[in-house]
Length: 265
Figure 1 (tube, rainbow, N blue to C red):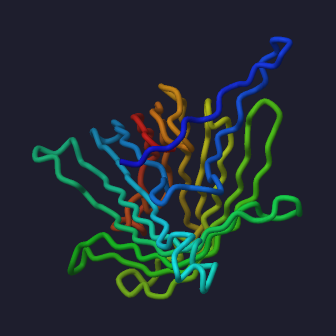
Figure 2 (cartoon, rainbow, N blue to C red; figure 1 turned 30 degrees about the horizontal axis):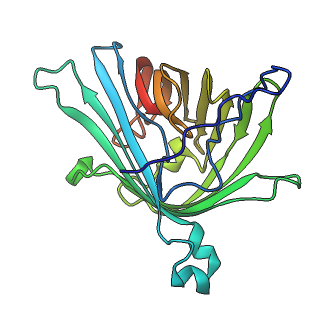
């Protein structure tokens, strides 16, 4: 079992004044070996019949800071493996089948940068494979390399803005050679709010042919935070555009609002 210290509580001074609680860090510098990566949630919507979308995700730091490989090459201490799985569940059909699932193993390097200078506060870069695990004409897969600088701005009152564009190039897209027309080469990712309160995140994609998609996630805590981005949250998700699933990367879906519960946001 992974045991982490509780988040810092508000401190009381000698005159009885209570200082604001320390900010929760969504990307803490000293993360545990096994930690959160992308949101973990299940949401349900009613557009054209009931459907659910759920996702789980984690990342694992491959080398211990005291290990021999890191002593030889310190950069290896920031190397991570991540896995994310996203499924669409057709609750309206009689057998309630899974319509499509995306499997995304990722190998990447992540580091916190010097915040005393202008520029990104964090950086990620690496390789990702994405596949829906099907065969024949339903098979979809891509291999990409990506870089992701993360810029951060803290505001009074506890709100934080993250701007984290993810730039990628395709190494292989044989099953779907025109996917860049619908997905493009960058995910415009923004995250804004209070890690202890309401939080809004978005991902915008624009394909090379002008097609695109938008996803907005709004969440609010239902319990005290456990650590980092983990707890229990009321979760709203709005999707519009092309490629809700990898199978339908070139098909436009009706705008869909789903509501549910998240463990990580």
